[in-house]
Image (cartoon, rainbow, N blue to C red; front, side, top):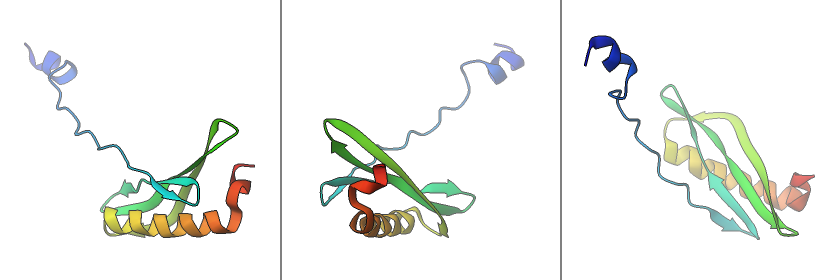
Length: 94
C-alpha cells in the first residue's frame, strides 16, 4: 500500500468509542449527564427525557460552565437538571 492510500485508506487509527451513558431516574424523568470536552476542560451538558403519551420527549441541557473533570461536570449537570425538573416539570417540553 502506498503512502497516499495509507493516509486516506482504511488504515487510519480507530477512534476510541465512548461508553453508553446511563440514565439517572428522577421524579419520572431520565437524566443523561453527557459532559462535552472542550480543550482541557468539560462543559456541563446532557439530556432530560420523559415518556409522555407514549412518546419520548427530550430536552437538551447545555450550560456555559466549564469544569476541570468530566466527573465533576456530570455531577454538576445532574444537580442542575434535578433543580430544573423541580422548577419546570413537563413544561420544559412545551
